[in-house]
Image (cartoon, rainbow, N blue to C red; front, side, top):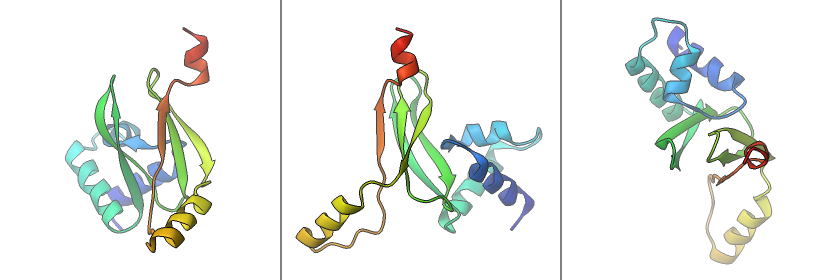
Amino acid sequence: MTKARAAVLEILSGACEPLSASGVLRSLPEGADQVTVYRTLRYLENHGYASSFILHCEAHGTERYYSAADRQCRHWFHCERCHGFIDLGSCALDSLVSGYERSLGIAVRSHMLTLSGVCLKCRKNV
């Protein structure tokens, strides 16, 4: 693995919330360029080192967010005011997915859940 790929993967692995490409770029030392970050993120995702999801936020537009794939299945709450993420913990959808698989005869390979709204801190500051 190249130094750039290893550096981006280390940033994703150490992050406590999903990061956009610009968030990854801000975490890298000066001199890193945007094209390399995008290519590296695509490589990491295509090779199973990272996963991503697309989120639409009224204040920030539509953007793709990345996290390291070595983490167990995680789901996120996104605050529409402060644009922060809260980790909802480990997956609680296993029984729901199993029910769909049994009743519909499907085999689920992956899933994602992102909830959006207003976090407690922002609700108190209204």
